[in-house]
Amino acid sequence: MTAANPAQGVSATPLASDFEAATREQWLALVDKAIKGADFEKKLVTRTADGIRVEPIYVRSNGVPELQAAIPGQAPFTRGAASTVRGLGWEIRQRISALDPARANTQILTELEGGSNGILVDVEAPGQTGCRIKSAADMTTLLSGMRLDLAPVELNAGLGAPDAARHLLASLSGLSIPAQSAQVLLGLDPIGSLARWGALPVSVEQALADAIALAREAAAKAPLSRTVRVDATIYHEAGATEAYELAALGATLIAYLRAFEAAGVSPSDALKQISFAVSADTDLFATVAKLRAARRLIWRIADASGAGDAAANLHIAARASFRVMAQRDPWTNMLRSTLCCAGAVLGGADAITVLPFTAALGEADDFARRCARNIQIVLQEESWLGRVLDPMGGSWYIESLTDEVAKTAWGLLQEIESKGGILAALEQGFVQDKIAADASARAKAIATGRSDLTGVSAFPLLGDDGVTVAPREAASPVTWKQAVRPLAPHRLAEPFEALRDAADAYTKRSGKTPVVFLASLGQVIDHTARSTWIKNYLAAGGISVLTTDGYASAEEAAKAFAASGATTACICSSDALYAEHAEATAKALKAAGAKLVLMAGRPGDKEAALKAAGVDQFLFSGADAVQTLTGLQQKLGVTS
Image (tube, rainbow, N blue to C red; front, top):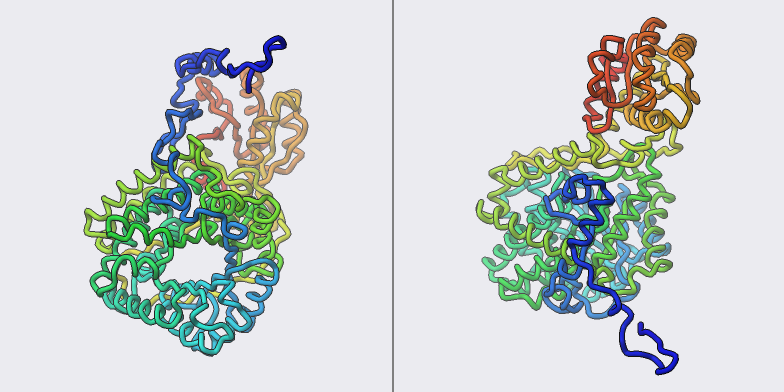
């Protein structure tokens, strides 16, 4: 924009030149004034689960020149492997897991008619449920009516992947599409299966040899197929951070390339047979950076193998994270799935799978699958998120975060390689220990309120949420001898769901609901902040509260408590009213028969006096909520 001069016309001087360039020191001075001298690092700087520093503001100097100068479709493919937008941007690959092949086929055709253009089929195998495919005929039934030249199918068969792959290859001749045109992803990942279940039906060496033999067979029968999958979601679902998920992906890729090369297959030809799966969770920016960093990591490994150009044809599928899904108030899972999908799109995933909002509860019905499908369709056809290549590229924050995630992942990859590679690191328990530590740190952040789960630890819904589903059939056990410690998946909400389950069991057993009387002092404006907080806090443990607009005195609160029939009370108000009335209220509540008196907020230097007056426990943010609520349930008689 330029400044206009009525006498001389339009000046060539930009308006910005009239302002002095701001310095970081000036900005910091203003920030210090705004935060009133508080510690800048503690107040405004955060860190990711990998310890990557996240600044409150990013400027040009935070950018990464080599990334900002990069062009989509060119190495190192951080900005995407394509130079032009493909169709609507990505493949909508929806998940099918019906047990009966004919029923699964009906669901597949419904998905394709409804807007999906790819299918991920869960196949029954030891350790997992899914479609029961026992022969090529079953596979033909499953895929009947599919245009595999237009809609790819991916198998997710875990420990049964070799058999499922053979059934699919054998079924190709019975389908209406020429095998040369069929787009199939067979999903063999013996290293990932070993990591997930701790055992394989054959030695890992034999499993790798079988995978390579199947890759040769598949390349001959269906040249557009990909046989081997590097599935990093296994590590994510067990608790891995973004960078460690990529480190495991990279280490697994290296192991497969070495196995192919030992069998006489070049890295370039091997990469044509390999697909990748990564997770997408509710941290949108982290998902974007992870996907962009994944392509850079894969290219670097491929380039070091002399096959850098082959990375231009890599295929990365993003799967919405199961670990972020919740059982309680599952409607909130639609928000989570939307964030997962958006992050995957903006990160440049080639195919995306969104979970039904009831995925954590059991089998999905038509409505739940339709909702999952429509999340993608809305983002694709109404929001047009796929119409721009690397839409987040050029953002100083995203470029910096991508660079840091890639560098951190590379360092972690080197640690795995220093142990002898991914297989040796799994055998030593190195990978499992690192992921367990990261999962523990994340669980602590949620329990102490530094990270919230909506509908679970924050704003939980008590009572019936209106959702019922058919339970999922139990998976058959893995009976082979355990070779490594398995990486069991878990959901973030599980500790709080256990509390809710205990409260429900108590209600069913006793006919009573665990309840706490809120002795809210003063007017609504005085106590609403703490009353609202404690209501949500207790609800996360399945404990309901009795509320009013507030009580003018300790005597009034005690009288109402006595009439309520409750045995536990919690004092709630402002610090000012606490100083004036808290001790008297605690004494009055005890006199009125309260067996347990709680108080919302930290006691400060009044702790001894408040305890002497009758306060048994203080509830405040920052403490471990799971531990605290477990103790409260015991005191309320919910659990023994």
